[in-house]
Image (cartoon, rainbow over all chains, first blue to last red; front, side, top):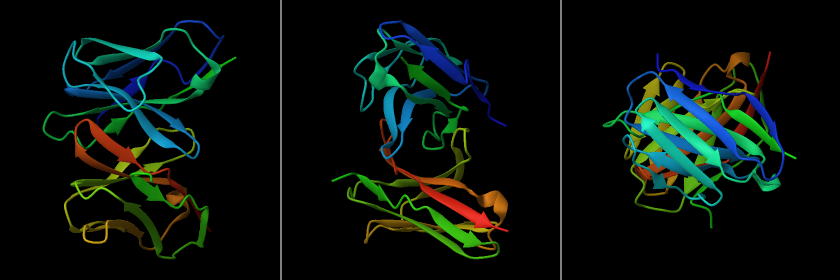
Length: 113
Length: 110
């Protein structure tokens, strides 16, 4: 079974702090994604990566950056956390030829005070 | 207009009922259609994946795609309390263009 793990289930940070969210997958997937999920808005794509050191902006990249130094790991960085970044953050991965079949991690609920 | 519209519910049915969940979309370029199930405080789990139009069946679950009407459905037969979850539809034109519905909350009452 594909396993996608995220470093924290719950995180509380202060406004202005730099926040790192880590995601690791164990299925040698080429593609990795970061989403945020908010009530009434569904999942929105922040960034994705289709290869090591490659990244592409999704629909809402402002205020975020990403890093993919190794194939199995994809990090989401909030450079200066703000209260409107309080959300559920979900990481997903998929294979190169089956990129539509995404496997999600359990999510990190981030609260910015 | 949103790319994908999904009735948020909530939907409550008795155990054993047939459940119908639906999404509409506006972009005729979508080719790939997915249904995810999300339990409370968990990440979404892929349930069904279809390409283009037609039906796909997997156990108690059937996914239908009607591209002419821009309408997709997920049917759950003989619903069980363990089916209680939020169901998300998703569709794609390609790797960088995924769109999710907001989810329908389903409760199956024993």
